Length: 282
View 1 (tube, one colour):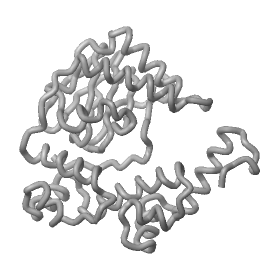
View 2 (tube, rainbow, N blue to C red; view 1 turned 135 degrees about the vertical axis):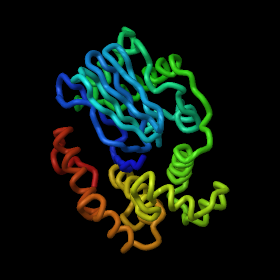
View 3 (cartoon, rainbow, N blue to C red; view 1 turned 60 degrees about the vertical axis):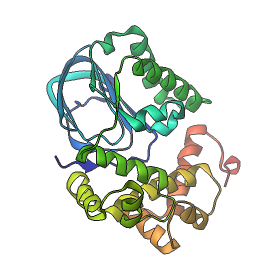
View 4 (spheres, rainbow, N blue to C red; view 1 turned 90 degrees about the vertical axis):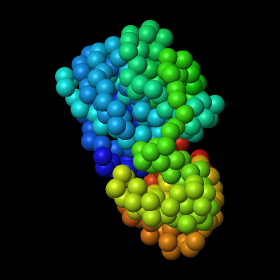
């Protein structure tokens, strides 16, 4: 199964079918986020790695980071879906990066009153612009996923092509700021570098250098918004050898320069907070 690598710069994404419309059906893909939905009505066929499942109204499904997955809508669903970077809930990150669920479908979980209330709170808070929004969301998410993990039977990641993909992606996510090459990965993961290259092209449909650059650009996006570091400092911090290479990779992925991206995010923040120009941190 070939999958599209989906690189998301958002730490959290939430979609509520009642508000936003759309079905769950989506082509084969993978990403570093946890993807989860509570399905209140409808029927979805789900493939995760090589396993196939059916999820009906009242069920939930969860996909751990770096698992290849496909959704096929059989009967239009009523649902709330979340995609979350596991770094947002570091207390639970070891469970999400070193194991996978024995079953990706959790029967009856959408009928659990506590889980349903929590995901509705997350959906409501996600759409607000108010003080302490991020802290509230993180609290709700931590409780939600802690409760959900109690309903899951986890198993350690095993060998095989699909799990090698996860090992490669986890390693790159943890080390993209450092000098990386296929030879470095091969040595540290005890794999043949040609095998790694083949796995990435055949399973992820992306080359090694493009994948590493995508991680570095995503890291740079966070630093451009959350720090006052210069573009040059950020370029070095996320692992680029030269500023020129950084600018080229950033523009290719984001469609603008790093400076333009930072300015755009400042303007967006200004509109959200209602702060006058003079009160916005430069």
